[in-house]
Image (cartoon, rainbow, N blue to C red; front, side, top):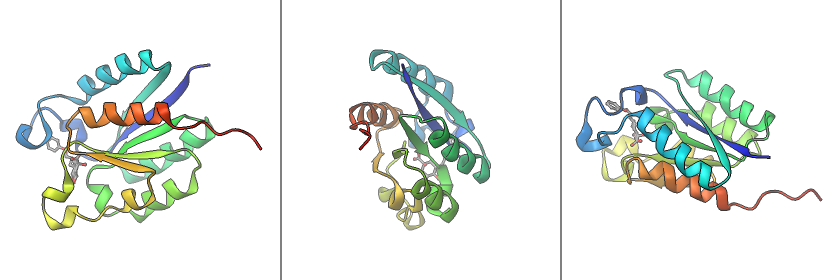
Length: 150
Ligand code: CA2
């Protein structure tokens, strides 16, 4: 059966493609969803892309990923990346692999973006490739070993 990858996006990412194109590119979140759906088809996966400006929604969706046995989570937590112990704990609490993703490379930006609570708990991080960061993350999840029952 086709497995699902949740693609979770945090605050302000609903504005993607409307402002700051020099940092985040011209593509909207819908454009990214379309790219991922096309790629997912070739990898025999299904993507479920969501966005919220509320931290608790992201926590709930991480729990849901485990409950529905998702193949993985691609998480761009936006600014919560740099502030959220709740997201850090939620990532640690689930067995589902979570990949941290960013459009920009936070390490080349302001110092307050250099620390990531999400990255400390995530399986890995892909940053700095614009919309391509999401596609690279989906390819990585497709290649992760699936768990074999003991
Ligand atoms: O580069 C990324 O993907 C970020 O996660 C984007 C966050 C930022 O706080 C992180 O440090 C890095 C900001 C998302 C805001 O998105 C906007 C998109 C268009 C216009 C304004 C904001």
